[in-house]
Length: 578
Image (cartoon, rainbow, N blue to C red; front, side, top):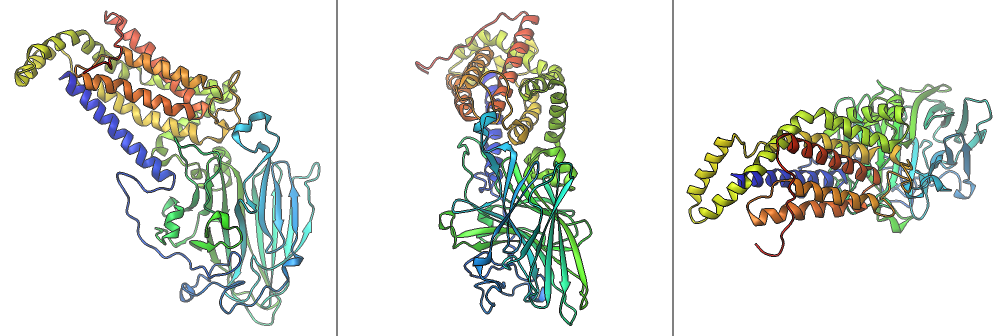
């Protein structure tokens, strides 16, 4: 039964690894390897061919499948103003440096002066992080405009006005873009950027300068390429792509390949929520006020301007209807655009459900309380590294008695292991008799051969959730711990922490009772060692968490063995033969 217990434990461990790998693949926007999910096919908004990103089709039911309008679309008029008149308009606040394109008044670049360019730069980085940008290496922009007629859209060149920098003592800055009259309509966009904020107020004012009522529709969209982000790891992965949140269906991630294949399971209509583009640590989102009905879309946009980024760009957005605007009248729609780090507390303040862009996957119900506790600890200790260690300690204390039962069972198994080995040798030609004798020993010694499995299984979801908390938390980025660790979100530059983790893993394995089966005994060493190799390329914060867990587990196991009178024994690997 000892080898049965070990087999069950390895089966549980192996199945957990299978589930983790599948969730890892799905989280990264790739199909699940072992348990593929089916997707309901829903047609995305059609995109017309053209030389530039085109505007979405009107959202009216009758026009749902109509060709998109815009430059290059069949039968569409050329842009009203030559491209040569375009210019860029840059605005600076304490947290944002925004670059607008006068063509459409679109936001084409967002820099964060207080965030280093990449996590490996740490506190010594000199350049700032850029999220939205438009160049040969990256296309990622926020656009808006009108559809439903020959109205101003994001291809219409507009006239800018307003200050370019937030003045000392001022709480906000306003930037205005006014389009020329087109189809009897003017569109005025006003961006309001506040001090200390990553979210931007955007008012779209539709002015009817014609002689008849008009009923345009307002679209808001984020367009980006599907190119993988630089600096990723082959050993862990995070999601990059569009996401949609509605009051009805909640949070829904969409893989780029599903958009390419026109396989998007998307709720089309909603009266609340947002559309977003998500990547590791950062996100952007268009947000309309609750109660405004909107139709959602995800689509591909032909890419002819940056061939290195692939044949398609990807757009996620929403279209809302405006009531008829009488001649000489105007109507305004207030929206909000967010571009910034995935600071969970800040996201909760910006919009309901926006904190879900910091995606913990299927363990959100456990991960959010763990993050809350980690944040509370950090307010006391002021160091994220020590906070990680303190959180692991609290979790170990909470599970002490449960885990103690498992260790007690393992200690009893270690104590009777010589008798079990002798039985296996004596009855190696009579398996039935051997099993009967083993059961007799277990009854006499009151040992449950699978008594150590349940405590481990209960704790696995908690520690997986903590793993995702540490991997997803932007506060770890550029956060120092001690000495040579300047960034808990980057791998240890000298591999000291991974080496310590490997040693503690080997020590913990040596303290466990050796399985009677030689093959299982070898696997008991091979799998932890292979797992340790992966951690040489993991963020330092994750490795620190695992070291702390190992050390506390070793101390607890040693203490329980001492209390039960089991002398310390080290089961060293034997790879010389079977």
